[in-house]
Length: 289
Ligand code: PAF
Image 1 (spheres, protein in one colour):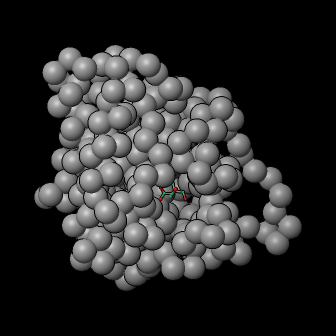
Image 2 (cartoon, rainbow, N blue to C red; image 1 turned 135 degrees about the vertical axis):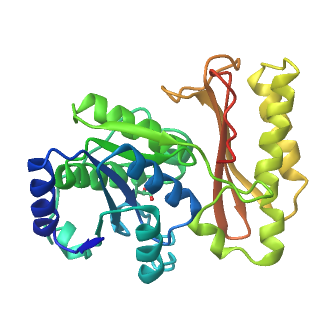
């Protein structure tokens, strides 16, 4: 496995690989990898001849009062995981490699970024779309892999790729959960043991929604009300949002039918966790991959 910290090095490897006719998969990450990331790397390694994993804590996608300074990191552990999952190249640039001091060009996807996390984290998706576009231009992958856990991010990136004609296939991969249902996240490491127990309320509320849907309850308001009631039984939980939207347009829907996304963000103590479920698509997706 190769490790590169400059754009020039990455481009050299990519040119060599493309000359050989190899297909390239990209897994963008911010490090502190967990089984969710590992599933993306393994999927890319099985789909492509070469897999590039970027490990870059992207400062421009964090708001002023967010956790950029405390975001967990452990590059040696990450490198090991990447190697075990079949990655070929790890790109770990410094901030100065990715952003000139006078950097002033951004990619912004409108509309889809107005609600959900976009409403709560102004500028977040502009930062995500900008860094992902830069990585796409540097790595020029055939396919890029993103987790369904960040459902809005996945929908926004798919739209960006469509609208800006990136010749890259975006592959969304199922949420990976702990045995008890908590969605894997680097931010789970912030939770105390009491908060860890309390965090299960996100999954429980989504399971309640799924059960209601399976009993033919399609009314978004009723389902939303039930989710809110379940979350409010947990004293350590504070709802940031609960939204029921179309999974592609991210527009609110009154009735759950075709591929509807139920997305939530909940503070457990100071830690903001997100989770989601898709109902009414080909099959209900609350994956335990
Ligand atoms: O999902 C993430 O970890 C980040 O938003 C991403 C896609 C790596 C961009 O920094």
